[in-house]
Image (cartoon, rainbow, N blue to C red):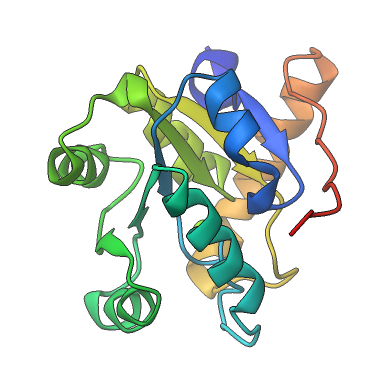
Amino acid sequence: MLKKFFSPDDFIEEYDFIDIEYMNMHNKKVIISDLDNTLISWDSKRDTKQLTKWLNRMRKAGFDIIVVSNNTEERVKEFCEKLNLQYVAEAKKPLTTGFKKALQKLNRKPEDAIILGDQVLTDIFGAKNLGGAMSVLVKPISKTDAFKTRINRFFERKIIKKLKNRKQFPKMKLRRKIKS
Ligand SMILES: [Mg+2]
């Protein structure tokens, strides 16, 4: 039960662990990504140079990247327009409507997609609810969280601990040096 809904298919240290090789290995065409603490820190103090580089490399290789975030239209729009990213805001993850909207925009099936995010209770649980997609958990960029997230983290820690005890939680894959 816990494994079925909360154990990610993979666990990575940073979003750019997903590269062209990774996409091809898993036969995926689309990355549906969370925004806060997945691509940028939730208080967005970090510059986006590394992110831009990764986005350009992935898009050039023909992969689609779309943001699905629970954050407000205002915040998500501002960020995504700067980076020329498609997005769905106010997605209400773990509900699946946001993911479905994103797939519709790209004319893709769940099976084509990696769903990437830093929270087990929203991103991973949502991906599992949708079904078909590969769920990838990423270590949160910032150690702090917005208040709402802090409550989720409390339950998340308990779930991860249980899954780890049962050896049902993947080991984190460490970041590789990027060739550019
Ligand atoms: Mg997040």
